[in-house]
Length: 272
Image 1 (cartoon, rainbow, N blue to C red):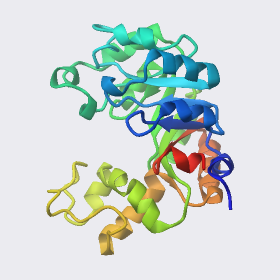
Image 2 (image 1 turned 120 degrees about the vertical axis):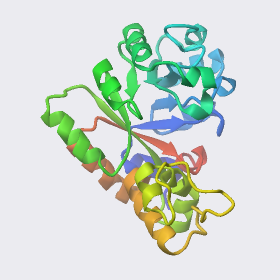
Image 3 (image 1 turned 180 degrees about the vertical axis):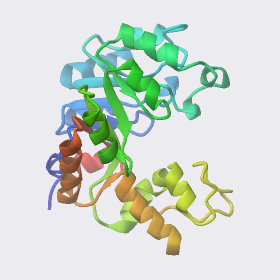
């Protein structure tokens, strides 16, 4: 039986994304992959400068910085940028509304993304919800995996885009369907095409009334389970390490440079 380190190495991903609210990110040094991105889940979860310094010395470190958030706003309060070590690279994103205040969410993205890119020309640029703005800003385009990723990337390459493209995907290294749905069912259910396809889905990605909506985990049945199982293969990297490797290879063949896996079952799946 493969260890977690062996499984993730065999899967072929070349970077790991960690959520500081979910795990001790200092364990990144134990991973078999030396490119690590730290997601942003609110400034209360931002690792301290000492931890980031240590990670930057041990791995190729990327830190997600929402350009609308206080502390990372290049047109306002950018005081948190000093916490990011010089060797680390930034991942510039618009920022998820769950981690932004009402005032922060109302700020314009385009001028901030442009200003941040000028300050950090080697940064990756998150495309979720701001695809055209991100492309105009340039830099490594950092996309969420979807059912159209291969086609979209081929189109960008055919149109002459020669910059780097990175793809982020929740990753579950097992073909146990119950485990897969427990890990990524809720995530894929929030993706707009999936929300529309789910029974009684409203299509806005926000889900139905939690008191009446069908479950999205391993207890899902019937049409809901069918939709979620298919969506898990479109919007996440799931299956045996060999199955995931086939998907990763297909992405690279389409023109993707980096595949970033988020351990949806926790960091231990990639270690133990």
